[in-house]
Length: 248
Length: 150
Image (cartoon, rainbow over all chains, first blue to last red; front, top):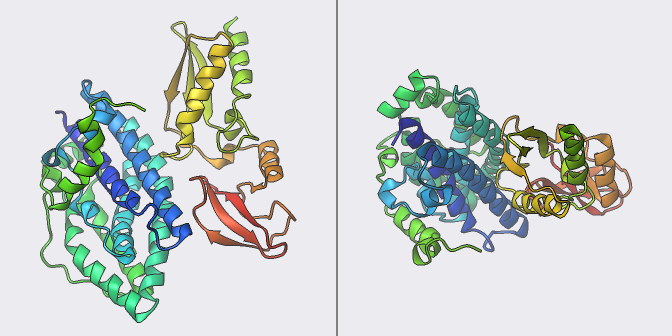
C-alpha cells in the first residue's frame, strides 16, 4: 500500500462513516426540513467519499471504489473515531457534526493547496459543501445551546461526551509527515489553533462551556476503533457481503 | 470534420435536460466542461454540481442514450473536479428559464419568482435537491425554491 493510497483512504473513510451516521436520521428528523437537511448533508458526505475512493482505487489499481467501501473490515478503516460515535439525541448529532465540520473546513482549505492535483481538486470541491455544513451545524449549536434549559443541558452533555474524540483530529503520524514533506499532506497539528478559535467563538455564542482537555482517544488512523464501527459496517456492508457484486 | 462533429455533440448535449430541472439542459447547467477529440474518441468532461448529487448519474446515462441514438458511439465521459462547479457559470438566459419555471435563480438578493418582490425569507437552507433551498415571499406569501449560490 502506498502512503498516498492510505492517506486518501483515511479522508474517504471519515466522510463515508459520518455520511452513514447522518443517513440514519432519514425519516426520523425532528422536523421535515431538518430531516431533509441531514439527508442532504449525508449525500454530500457520500459524494465526497466517492471522489476520494475513486482516486484511491486508481492508485491501488486492483480494487474498485465500491470494493474499498463495502469489502473492508473494521480494522482496515481509518476514519476518525469521532465520526463513528452514536447519533444520540439531535444535540449529540449536531455537536459531532460541528466539531468535525470545523476541522473539515480548515483541513480542506489547506488540502486545496496540495501538490497532488487530484487531492487538491477534490478538496476545493468538498470545501464549498463543508462551508454550508458548517453553517448548518453552528447555527443549530447556537440555537440549542442558547435555547431552553433542557436543550442547553443536553447539548453540554454531548459536548463533554464527544470532546475526548477531538484530539485525534490533529495528530500527525509518520505517514502524514512523509507526505507533508512532499507538499501533499496537510499539517493537522497546525490546524489546532484556528480550530480552537472557531470552536470557542461558536461555543460562546451558544452559551456552552468548553470542556477541559483531558484523556484523548486515539487509534482511528491505525484502524483501531470504538465498538460502534463494527455495527455501522455490518449494516452498511450487508448487501455486498450477502450478495457479492449485486447491482441494481 | 472533427470540429463539425464536436459542434454536433455540443448541440446534442444541449438537448439533454437536467433530470431535476427539465427546463434547462446539462450544457446550460454548466456541468459539461469540454468536448475534445483524442485517440478516435470524443472525450466529454463533466463536473458534478454537488459531490453527492444523484442527478449526475442520471444525466450521464441520458447523455449516453442521446449520443448513441444519434449514432455517435466513440465517446467517453470523464468526471473532472477542478475547477469546481459554480453557479457563476449560468448565463442570464438560463437564469431567466429558471425564474419562469418558478425557481429563484442564484443571486445575492433572493427575488420571488412569482411576483418579483425582494421581500423574501428563508424557510430552510436545504430543499428537495442539494442545489436548492426553500424560501417564502412575504408579499405574495408563495413558498418557492432558490437555486443556491455556490
